[in-house]
Length: 285
Figure 1: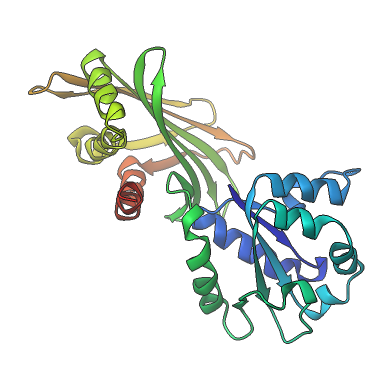
Figure 2 (figure 1 turned 180 degrees about the vertical axis):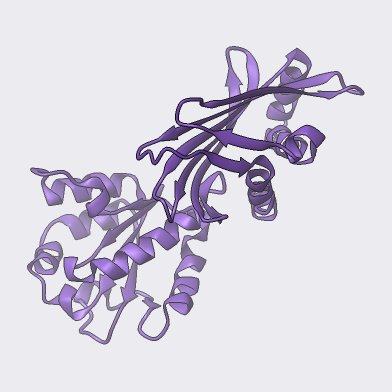
C-alpha cells in the first residue's frame, strides 16, 4: 500500500520533489504523471489509485483551491468513497490559502516555511507503510533503486537482490542482480524459522554473510557493453553444513557511450546493512 497525491499541475515541481523524497524513504507513490496514459479517465484512475493506497495527500495551494479539478473533487462521489475505504487524508499546506471544507478538520503537514521540516512532519504519519525492502540510495555518483526479496522457489530457499543504477553525470544505466540459493540444510532451517514467524532471520544472515565474505567484500565488478558481468561464489558454514550459492550478474542498459562501468560490490551491501536497524525495528512490531 502507498499514497495517492492530489494536486494542481501548476505545483508539479513541488510534487515531483515530494514524490522522489517519499520513494527514497520507501513509500510507494501513485502520481498521475507517472501512471496515467493518453485517453485515461482521471476519475477512474483516481478510483483505481485509491484501491491501492492507504493515504491521500492533498497539496493545498491557491492554484489547487481555485482549480476546476478541486471543485469537481469536492462535488463528486469520490469523497464518500474515500471515507468508505477508510483512506487517511492528509492535507499538505504549500502556502497560505483557503482550506476546502472537507479538509478543515484535518491536521495538515506544514511546508510553507521549510521543505525538510514539513517532510519530517508528514513522514511521522506515513512511516507505518514504509517498505524497508524497496528503496533508493546514492553511491559514488549513482542513483540506485533496489529490491530485497526472499522466500521459497522450487522447494529451495532464495534471496534476490536487484539494483537498478543510474549514473547521474553520464545518464548511463545498468542492472546488477544478486541471486542466492540455499542448499537442503539451509532450506530446512528457513522452514523452521517460517513456522515460528521468524523468517527474516535467514535473509538478514545472508546479507551479513555477503557483506563480510572475504572474496565478496573486496570484489570489483567491471561491466562492458559487449561483455555482461557474471560470477558465482559458494558461501559455506562448516559448523551447520549450510551452503549459499551466490550468482552475481551485471549488464549495461539504455544509452551506450562505449565505456565500461566499474563498481565495488561492498558499496551495495554496506548501504543495505545501514538500514538493518530500521528493518529490525519492523520485525519487533
